[in-house]
Image (cartoon, rainbow, N blue to C red; front, top):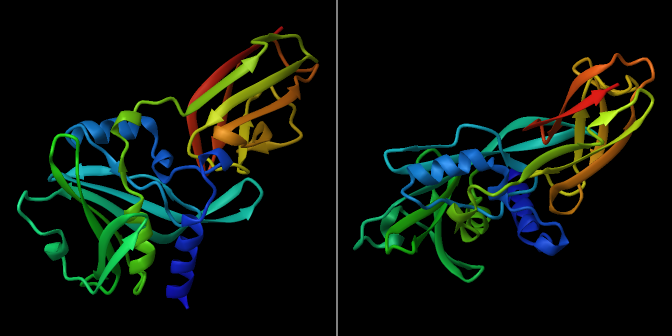
Length: 273
């Protein structure tokens, strides 16, 4: 049953809308700063998947060791609006060099040859009883790499194949701006209204952004600090308005935001007078 669910989930992900319809590439869940570091450590290339099972996202731990890139994607479940819980279900993405004369099919023991999204790839079982799928690519400098996706679930080779088939070099996108946060106006009178806008890179359209500041009214809160909420739209954009309480003390207040279980990593300031 678990095998069926995993494969069905991956097939649903592969049928997701295009970028114009709100599709968020799986590689964009890896923060830009992390992508930039990984690209540098990988010799100027960074192969990551564009597709992943529904709700699987990068959390932490991406690294390059012994010329092998490894990035773990973890499943999460929605507890309630704005609150997600990380599970123990994962798959690991790997990209590593392949010798010039090596045969891709013989890289690992395989039981299937697949043709997905115009790419030829292979799948099989891991020694631990899980599933692995892989294919080989050549970068713009003529270097060969093996792209693979590994899951502890048995029989998920086709599903992992869909992930592998979507792999591409995103090194040229590693430093792109995918997060932002602004407050307008930056100076506001007590009792006045502010507009908070931003970009929540890595969060899917429809996700909720939690915007946090002690300048906000205390009707809602996060970790004891007043908060307001916004919904992620196309290209990760979000916005929300709120009124600064008339009783708020004058001064400068920090505004931050969270989405997808983590901080966006950027802040803005608003001065109350």
